[in-house]
Image 1 (cartoon, one colour):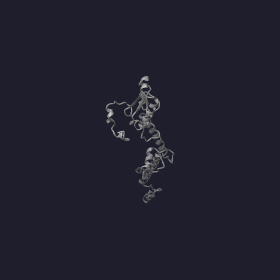
Image 2: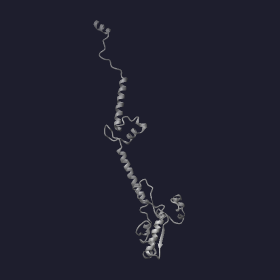
Image 3: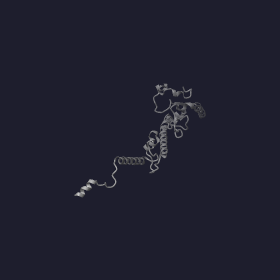
Image 4: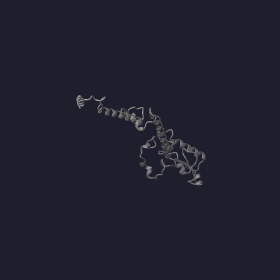
Length: 227
């Protein structure tokens, strides 16, 4: 499957043959591969390792994560990488397999086997960088949105989210009144309008009062004269 670029991605991770024989290591990546050189010179080891690094790069090299934050996420994806470590028989005999005698392809210097197989720049770093980049992007977008928030032309206060949405959405904008004022100022306008409407209604329902004193009746005047 590795003979074709990206072909191994189409194989389910749990169905790969090596999973039946090797227990999970807790690390991302495929089964480690170790080269132990014996009865050879340092120059030959160096030349062979250089060939392994160049010819096998597509197998051992990690890839970049496909992230929305490519500029800030520097972590590498080791999930399809074969960890390749090298050492010599002389180093193993002289220092032991748990000593810093292993060098992993793509790295410089010698490490312990555990350190060589670990991926400090792998998935754990990716999750941390992705979370940090996402939080920074969210904060940036929130700041940009806050910079676009309308300001009341009457009192100078910023619009609430509800008032901002009210003057923006088509279904509510027609009932938003003066869209240059904030929610409290709009509420004051509504209160004044309602008070004026109520006063007009009461005025229309009350009959007008007569002007001046009414003229006395004639019969009443004669009655007073005779008495």
